[in-house]
Image (cartoon, rainbow, N blue to C red; front, side, top):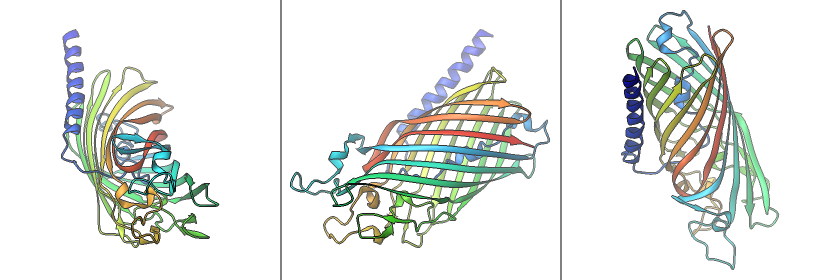
Length: 362
């Protein structure tokens, strides 16, 4: 028994190590935006309160959950190097203007998301899921523009609606392979306005402050889950392909991720776990011309208005705690932060991501 337990532990460690190696050498060699607009598709697919191994014995076709998530972005990166606000802020007379300094610099970006997720099992192997987020964002700035030394802009409203269909490809007594595809409907606004230093009154806000992508996007997903006596673990990968350009003549970058997780299942009350995710995002294609200023050499007043200052890759570590309670109810809290960043920049980096989810099946 000790040998078998040790062997299983070694398998989990080898899978995690292989995952990290594959991520580091991934074919996603280009860079991508850390857009603030998306809840992860993998969270949507994992919204069931009961495991796939139990579903054959239970008649629970509906799965409903509510998630509250908050993210904070502050420190700037150019590639793998951290740079200060002073490095990014252009100071007349102190340094020449370049492609990496700007007269306006966002200092802290905060995002809150309230998301409702609903899933329905069409058959024993086929499930349809939907997610609707409500997004609230706020950004503090510093600038050299008179009257705008320090200012804040914000936006809030409905984000993009996601609908996905997933199918179990193969299932054993204690494992399951699953694949899915879906569509993200552009229900979120891309016309949010606010008072910025570009001109008096309200103007179009930058890409990071918009509530949706403005395009029809298509996520695809593949996952493997293993249910052990005391440990559950799994691997998953996803990609989201964005199509065309929106009404403001741009599209956000395609994105992809690969991840692995382990959760201790030795208690019916508390189930702690850890997760690693490697994320890649492409840069913005096209641009919103209204975000430019009348300067032919340096048309972008802030890094968040420059479509080339989006994109990159990062490795995130997450700890989570799942807490089943009552009958068919659960709560889960998670905290994640990046271990590695390589961003087109200067670009504001994610400091942390905190979420709380409550759900049930019936």
